[in-house]
Amino acid sequence: MNTAINMVSLWTLIKREMVRSLKIINQVLWPPVITTLLYVFVFGVALGSRIPSLQGVSYAQFLIPGLIMLQVIDASYGECSSSLFQMRFMNAIQELLIAPLSATEIVLGFLLGSLGRAYVIAGLITILGIVLVHAVPQQWGIFLLLITIVSVLFSSLGLIVGLLAEKFDHIAVLTTFAITPLVFVGGVFTAATMLPPALRSLELINPIFYMIDAFRLSYTGQSYLSPALSVGVVTTLAVAATAVAWRMVAVGYKLRA
Amino acid sequence: MDGLVKRYGAFTAVGGMSFRVEAGDFFGFLGPNGAGKTTSINSIVGLVHATSGSISVFGHDNVREWREARRLVGLAPQEYNFDRYLSIRDVLLYQAGYYGISHRSVRARVDELLERFGLKEWASKDYLKLSGGMKRRLTLARALVHSPKLLILDEPTAGVDVELRLELWSMLRALNAEGLTIFLTTHYLEEAEELCRNIGIVRAGKLVALKPTTELLASGDSLQDVFLELTRR
Image 1 (cartoon, rainbow over the protein chains, first blue to last red):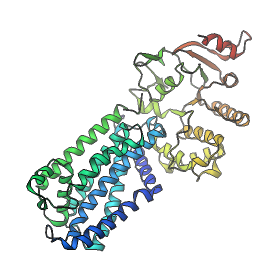
Image 2: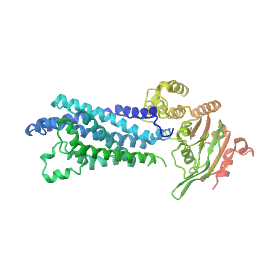
Image 3: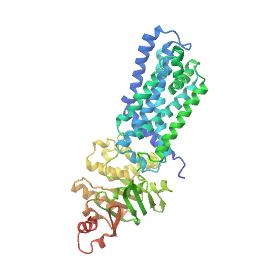
Image 4: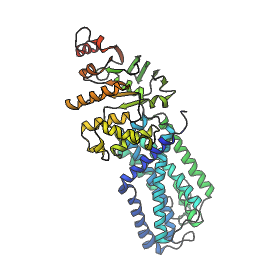
């Protein structure tokens, strides 16, 4: 009885996350769309015309999967970290904590709400890619799988940081010093084959490289690394991050005294 | 509550508290600041993990049978802690949802509460637009939306004017008359004297009195005198 998932409670929490996203649509939906448009114009169209084709597609088409991953990572981390921290900050989290909601329901509610936001943003950018540069996903299975796993991973990291943070400033620490640099050198704008061998080896310790490389396979049909290896690495990280987030919620870390 | 102990490091907030509140009672839980009232309340609702001891809510242990125990309790905290992204109606609908009650089946209950607490006209508004008194009423409505059997009120009339205080007293009396068990903490001793049938007084994490209000006042002293006598350090 105590371990079964209450679907009404879970759906309520998912819906709450969606309502929150809609209420701050100018912060969560339009910025990734506009940023993507700018990236496509500046790097893809203006500068990209001087770059030869990569993985059999134009540079602008090569960019699109990287930009989708970039925004999925940003949206997933941002949704969970700021939503949870705000709830803690305003003590609205108490509404969840005194209700008969399990740690599993709370974590799933945040993750699925965040996943919804990631799907919407990925969908919009995919449409932009099709309309602007005729970049069409070829393998929808790997396309959806990667978006899902990557969103779960960064949503879980968002939950962890949302629990650890003592002030809003702390939420930005992981983004500024880890996520953004790793994303930018993780293959959004460059193919591994464009890098000198020493840097290419260095990419292998950047987890985001595995995500983008495998995701780009869904567009170009080519990847630098084995897709099974990349999916394995990303899935392992997602499971580990989710387990840590679940454990923190289950023991009431910074939630219950 | 049976032998509840809560320690924060070397500090003991609640030092072995035991008492029982009967179903249907209007129970006052009084004590000076830092006496352990909020820690006790938070232990009942699961916001605090007890160091030792146990709490049972209508026969359900609040650790082993936490889902059943929590379904039976409604908490109206002292501080406003509404979800800022939800309208007033949604605050109630979503709270019911967290308790596993679907929006469709709780809609009539929400309308009834909005009407009862004078919030109907404000239902689609943001809670930030409400006055302090209306926020206080919304806190009560939210605590009641899942039809709990025990309502815990933490300083329900703190910072409200006399008129609203009397209005809230009347609402609380009516709820209690309908069979709701009420557990009230307050610093307004006349409030406890006016509303509560039984009173427990705590000092430094220990219960120092637990009596019917009439017995506490039998000597002819005011509740304030009795309270000061029992809690004087």
